[in-house]
Image (cartoon, rainbow, N blue to C red):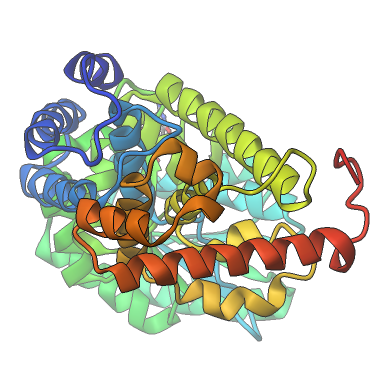
Length: 443
Ligand code: GDP
Ligand code: MG
């Protein structure tokens, strides 16, 4: 798996300041192969790998994770973002029935999906109706009726007076029926062909214009592989859609189609269908799909644990120091906190954990990353004794430290001043402003 291969790539690599270009290239190669094996379309692979490389370049080596884990984490986050971030919910109409139009190739699973979705909506407390607008396939209407019956959901099918033979008229009539019978969600099943087909695409677009759907969902077979991009693009141009439903995820497809479609169309995957039973249906979970695509579930669990442990240790340590519980706050602690700040992206996260620190949040959010680099260089040019007991840092030591870190003596002065100010502030907090955090030692 990708996780194993990355672990090999990085066997000998730890504790570097930044991921090197060679490390990033080696990783990028492995990710590229893994994505292609998962059937992600080549242009999407290229774009994705470039984005990951770009981000990896900018990133400091994490203290909590080894480089392989760190890159997998970046890859995972990028995948989840492209797949739609948080699961997107259906948009319901503000008044009148909500209309959901299903579009996709023949065999994609639209008719099956229509019934699954209707059952799911019913469980959400809605009262849906299924509309049979596939008048192309001889038994399509009957198939929907059978499925609807299984789901316990009414089906609106063409009959004399209900727009016989004309799917656009059937769709239009179904809205009237929904208003009459107080159905609140109308799910419209449409026809598809085996390949992209101009005539049926136009028919779907005409139905769309007739019913003005709140959501158009593009239904696509997860096994479609490399064709996913072209098919999705054709439906985006021909009908347009707001979200994607992936079907047949119970097959052995690794899910590359999901990434290709989401990446090329910018539309989120919203639902997943994973079997022939009506209940084989769920909201789509981008995080689960991301680990399926790269086969890295175990690695992600490890990463989560490593980070949690690390953060807990750091927070406990910082809190203990801040509150005067475990000896004095030193320059090493100061540096460690700065690094932690960068890792978490914003100091407000750390400080926000302590009551009374909210007032500093704005300043902390504006924290300059390069400033952390400068502070790090200066502190690293100090001896362990100086870091532990900054009071001994006199004039000649300051000159030496400035030289060692390539900074000015005034920079060293201002850092030392800032350190003492920070320590004083923390001691004040420890004394009065934050009386008795529960469970902290030494209070
Ligand atoms: P449509 O032409 O888009 O309406 O597709 P259908 O709903 O008729 O489905 C085509 C075939 O795929 C049928 O045999 C379904 O039983 C099957 N099918 C649909 N969804 C799934 C799924 O999630 N998993 C599996 N294994 N089969 C599915
Ligand atoms: Mg069908």
